[in-house]
Amino acid sequence: MSTKDRLEEIASAVRARWHTPAEPSKTAPTPGEDAAAEPPAQIQSVSPLAALDLDTAIRLRWSLRDIKAKRTKLTPVNAEDLNTLTELGLVELRGDGPALTNEGHRLLDH
Image 1 (cartoon, rainbow, N blue to C red):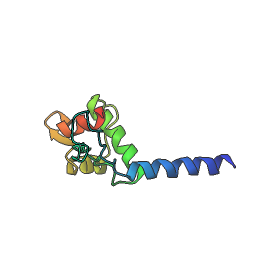
Image 2 (tube, rainbow, N blue to C red):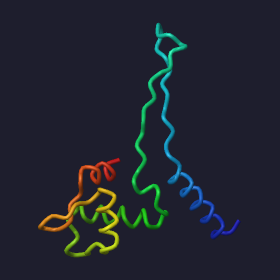
Image 3 (tube, rainbow, N blue to C red):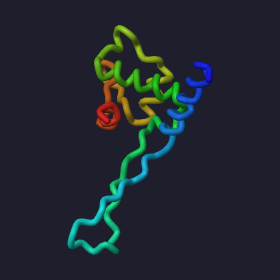
Image 4 (cartoon, rainbow, N blue to C red):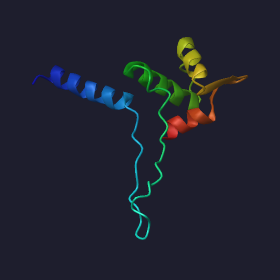
């Protein structure tokens, strides 16, 4: 298998993983608990970037990191990317420049 074929295989596996929502995990019943009772499922949120293609999602994630580290004066964020991040609710525009919302912080901390 050539290196290019191997890289394509890895990229397709990453894309499949990126676009597949995480399945809720189920816990086993504790002793003494009714085994027929359905254990509560943990709901995991899906990243707002999951619906985007891999290259765009990576670029936007780096933009979020630049905004968080306040590197936007040195390397400004592309206006289209900034608009996308604002529409997704990950960034808000303030007087001193873009800033992450709570959702933006959660995405990077996850």
